[in-house]
Length: 103
Image (cartoon, rainbow, N blue to C red; front, top):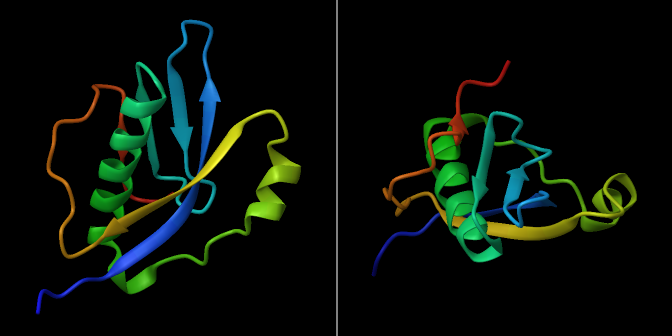
């Protein structure tokens, strides 16, 4: 049986004027990314979240509820992003993707 460690966090997808998206994780401020469209943004979000959390597995933050985020970001698209910390995607990210230590 393959080992898994799946975690899920909400991501906020903000539409930009050029139809691209900026993605942030309110509970994981150190992980941000972009994508040329919604699909690419979701793929990049999974990768950037996984890379950050894989390095910080001993201090995973609690996830904010969808209800709380809908009040905070009423005009943005909110989607839960799940990642298996035992199998984090290693694909290339956009140059403006950010995976850094939390400040």
